[in-house]
Amino acid sequence: GQNIDQPTEMTATEGAIVQINCTYQTSGFNGLFWYQQHAGEAPTFLSYNVLDGLEEKGRFSSFLSRSKGYSYLLLKELQMKDSASYLCAVMDSNYQLIWGAGTKLIIKP
Amino acid sequence: GAVVSQHPSRVICKSGTSVKIECRSLDFQATTMFWYRQFPKQSLMLMATSNEGSKATYEQGVEKDKFLINHASLTLSTLTVTSAHPEDSSFYICSAKGAFWDTATEAFFGQGTRLTVV
Image (tube, rainbow over all chains, first blue to last red):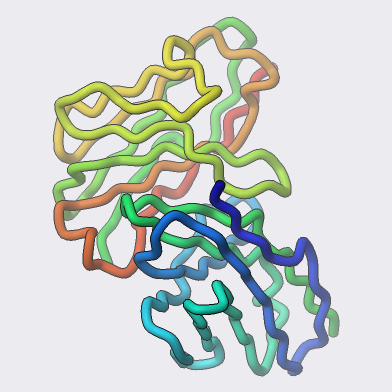
């Protein structure tokens, strides 16, 4: 079966750095996505990785290792507004998104 | 990026009534639309995939007679929750895919609809 694993909840301090991990087992791979979702809102796109390595976009970076079935989202200089759920999703061989359960990130002052 | 508009954003209905949710692609032709449901503290669960002009494909465990999906045009898909019950209360989200999506890098989501059945 297809499976996406990520931690349920993480806590970090304002101004610090946090890394959210995601491991996956899917039938085929056409890229891995990270989305941010605030409570009661639709997800918003953060990043997309299809090749191994690190993609940096401002305070957010995303890393992918296809051989390990592993990705992480790195958030730097954390702000209170970064408190949200972060969803990892993999596009399988049918171009269908398989979603992780999300990681709730709590930022403390 | 492309814009997907979902309406209404919130709806409260009485048990036994039907509710229609609309999903529109505003600046591109959505050949495929996906309907998701999300319960509190859980991930998005795909309910069905609809292609323009054809019947929707429902995921296992989703009742097609209860969740009616119509995708009559390239810019509009509707989800109708028929004979709603309190357990249908959830956050419903649509996302749209254009013919170009195979190489695009993001899914375009509607704003979501919070359905509460009382």
